[in-house]
Length: 124
Image 1 (cartoon, rainbow, N blue to C red):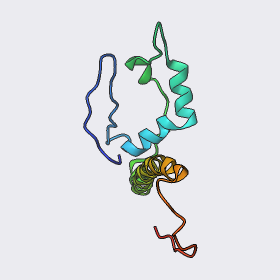
Image 2 (cartoon, rainbow, N blue to C red; image 1 turned 120 degrees about the horizontal axis):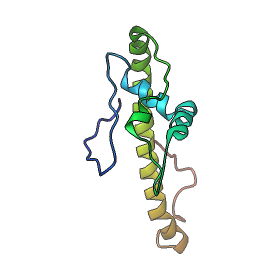
Image 3 (cartoon, rainbow, N blue to C red; image 1 turned 180 degrees about the vertical axis):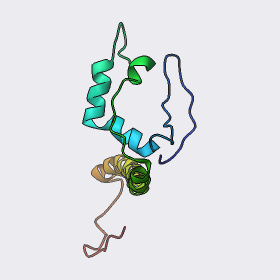
C-alpha cells in the first residue's frame, strides 16, 4: 500500500501481507480498518491478560473480494488517496509541533507580534 516501511515484530505479533493474486493491499487494509472489518476482528479476539487474535481466527475473517480487474482500478485511486492522507497527517503533526513550540513564546511575550503589519498576507 502507501508508504512501505521496514519494521520488526515483537513476540506474539504478526504482520499481514496481501496475496496480490487474491486482493490488493490497499483493499485489504481498508477492509480490515472499516467498521465491519473491526467488528469481525473484535468478535474473534481472545484474551487472558492482553486482548489478541490468533492467526487461525484471523483467517476466518470474512471479506468482500471484488474481481481483480475491479480491484486494480480501485486500488489506483485508493493508493493515491491514502498517500495524500499520509502527507496531510505528517503536515498536521509538524503544525502541532510548531504550535506547541511557538504558543508559549507568544503568550509570554518572548516573541513580539506587535510590529507585524495587520495586512500581512499568509501563504501556504
